[in-house]
Amino acid sequence: MGAILEIKHVSKFFGGLAANADVSFEMAEGMIMGLIGPNGAGKTTLFNCITGYYPPSRGEVLFKGMRMNGLEPNRVCRLGMARTWQKVRPLAKMSVLDNVMVGALCRTNSLTIAREMALEQLRVVRMESKADFLAGGLPIGERKKLEVARVLATKPELLLLDEVMGGLNPAESEEIIQLILDIRKRGVTQMVIEHDMKAIMRISDRIVVLNSGEKLAEGSPEEIVTNQAVIDAYLGSEH
Ligand SMILES: Nc1ncnc2c1ncn2[C@@H]1O[C@H](COP(=O)(O)OP(=O)(O)OP(=O)(O)O)[C@@H](O)[C@H]1O
Ligand SMILES: [Mg+2]
Image 1 (cartoon, rainbow, N blue to C red):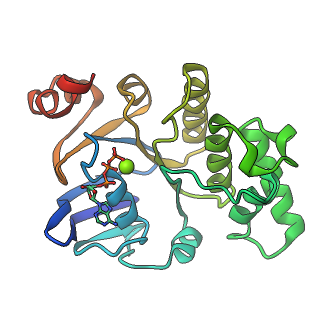
Image 2 (spheres, rainbow, N blue to C red):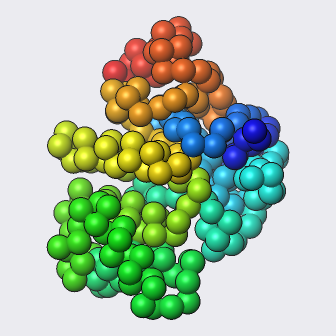
């Protein structure tokens, strides 16, 4: 069985700064990959390179064997890859339902079908009672869940979650963890950026650690928490 995602020697330069430096790894279908590392390690930049938002300066990204370098985000979404944003930015003056419909419209031109698809995903994140609320007025926990519902409505095969638990209280984080595990049961492959090590340990099949743009380590959660280089660069100081 081939990998759903292959990252091959990806580098991304901003002027003289290598935000990603020769990063390579693969993801098998259906798995959850944790992506961790200190602030500024290059995690979000790697998401941007994977989803075509930035073309990598060097190297390539293959999704289901297709080269993604520099494809338009809309095209990437239709091919089956969707990401959330670390800084959630819902369409504030639109309703919660309309925000999720924007995701569904990647799959259909019918507003009726998009509405049904959006309602289904609002039920998944347990926000159906908020469908008519303005997205801009939601508290952070619900904005994060709305973001997840919006990307789920695009019917992705690969979902990339950028700190969806950031800023949430323990109960809200637990809800997101259960959501991620439910999404895995439905066969969707996921890459998850998160600083909360307890959460990452629980949900990840494997973990990649970035540090100063480079891949510092890759392995099972047990291998990563006992890896001396990872402890020195990340776990020892912050956790
Ligand atoms: N558009 C950009 N232009 C210039 N520099 C950038 C740009 N985007 C990111 N960087 C730089 O690239 C480096 C990696 O940033 P990135 O946001 O990918 O880190 P991160 O691992 O996601 O960090 P955090 O945990 O804080 O979200 C940082 O030094 C950042 O300042
Ligand atoms: Mg980031």
